[in-house]
Length: 136
Image 1 (spheres, one colour):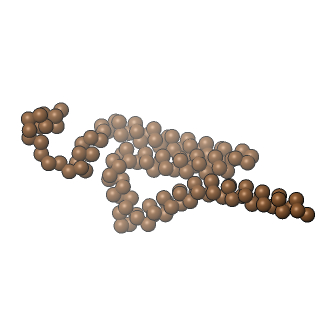
Image 2: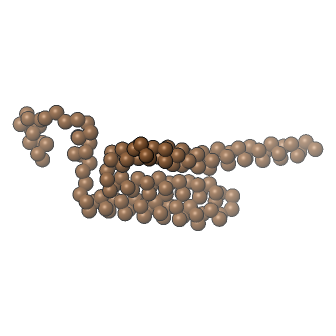
Image 3: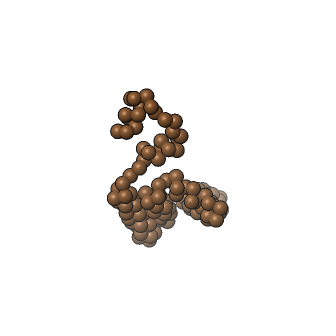
């Protein structure tokens, strides 16, 4: 409301984009805790569901990789509710944490790639072996 009064009265001060985003995304502490708990619980449920789906024949490994990775990403994003996305990203890219952040994101990406690329390559390899066996 104060922002609207400033704009309508013509006294709008120059704010940076970062300040505008921060003003637009401020949440109360209770809302932040609800968002954190909801995202964290969703992440844990997805991770546990992925472990349970691991034992399904044929498709279990793919479901495990997808659900487990999604659960880890959701749990990581849940902490952004506590301190805000900008502060979280700044802390993740801190001098002492940048290597861990890069490794975490790289391995999460490689896990997803392995779910889809290696399964495709395995199917291609099985087809080649079967076609090779038919020759003899």
